[in-house]
Each structure stands twice: as structure tokens, then as C-alpha cells.
Length: 311
Image (cartoon, rainbow, N blue to C red; front, side):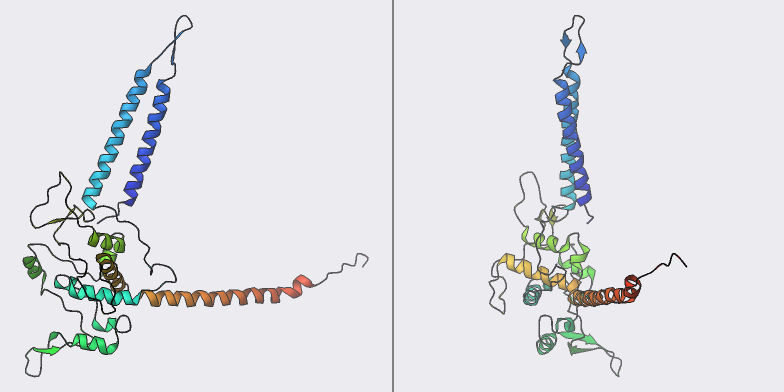
């Protein structure tokens, strides 16, 4: 999905210029433009009205292009104030834990998370013992053993989260030809990632009049084309949180979006902490540099030169 913000800004600028031209043409049409033979003036409004008509048609064309762009690339998501987006803000780790629960109970039936291992959850959303118990619930094909045979073993911390399908063909067969994308980098792979995912999860509604959605698809204006194969998955009370937080549809969408943002950038908190330490160290270096400069130049700047003009 490409970035359409620049195109829309350009369209609004063109529309503004065209409306300004229309106003100028309208004022010109109300002024006398031709002098009569006997000092009287005659009016020539036809050119002004023609300009106004041209400007109106151009404005309608710009609006049509904007609507076509929106239909092709999806409705632009609203901008939300995520608590971890600030320069010195960190992830809400309780929200990450709740988001992982939403992923496990709702999203994992169709979507994989191939770049996240169980060990990545340690110290972020769960303790090491909790993650070990979670990993041991799955069976992993490993091997070969001493006899050259593959064998099943309980999962361990180094294993990746299990994928719902063995391959893409199996995923498409189970979903009527649609391929559920891997969610490891979904907030980076989509324009305005977090806002897009959040808006998409809450954007399901009835198709407006004049829009036909074929069987097996669902109307969502935030998805490119407006027709998405994934049905509405989040409903109030669909997940029971461990911490007792009410599992409203909006809360679940916010939590799973936060979890996917962390999955795409698990090092974000460490990077921000490193940046804060670096900035503090540079401030100390700057103070020392200023002090050293003043100390080095103080003898030169404070000395007194006496010029003996006689000798």
C-alpha cells in the first residue's frame, strides 16, 4: 500500500488554486470590460461564466480523483496518540501481555508470527517460568536423532511461535484463496502501521448503498479496495484478560496493536534508553568542553598588554 498523503495534499492545493481562479473569474465577470462609442460601457460576462464553469468541472474532477484514490488504497486512518511513541516513552508491558492473549486466542488461528520466539516474551510480558510452561504446551518436530529419524519434542524458549499452516498453499486452501499475512512486521509493512491496524480492526460495517461486496468478503473502508476476506474477529468479551481488564472491542484492538508494534520493534525501549544515556553523556562532555575552553583562553583574554611608544 503506497503513501497517498502527498497526493492528497497536492489535490487540495490544486482545488484551492482552482477555487481562487473561480472567485477571480466571478469578480471579473461583474466589471465592465468594453467601452461604448458614446462613453457608455457594455458588459462581457460570458468569459467570466465560462471560467467559473471550467473551474467547477475541474473541482469535480479533483474530487473524483480523490474518491478513486480512497477507494483504491483505503480510507486514511485517524491519528492516535500511542503511549510508546514519544522519544522518552516506553511500551506499556501490561498492554503487551494482554495483546499477546488476544493474538493467541483470536489471531493465531490464521496468522503466523514467524519472527518472534518464546524467549522474546521473557521479561517483557511474562516471567521465564511462565514462558517455559507456555512453550512446553506445543510439540515441535526436531531431529534427526541417532537413527536418522525425526522426532517430536516439547517446545522450549528458543522455538518460534507456531504457525497455523505448514505452507502458503495450505493457508490459501483453508481461507478460500486468501492468504493471511505474517504479523511479525505488519506495523512496519503498512503505511501508518499502528493506526492502520487499529482502524482496520474496528472498521467493519455494512456496505453503503451502491457498493456490492461479493460473497466471502466483508466491507471495511480502511482496507485497499474496501473488501477484505478476514471477517470481524473482535467482539466485546471475546477474551478474558488475566488482570481483569474489561475486554471491550476497542480495548482488545488497542492491546493487540501494541503487541504487534512491540513484535516489529522489540528493541525500541533499549534503543531509546541508549539514546537518553548518550544525550546525557554528550551534555557532560559539552559542559567540560566549555569549561576547558574558558580555562585555556583565560590567560590570553585576561592579560594586559602595555605598549611603550617611546622605546
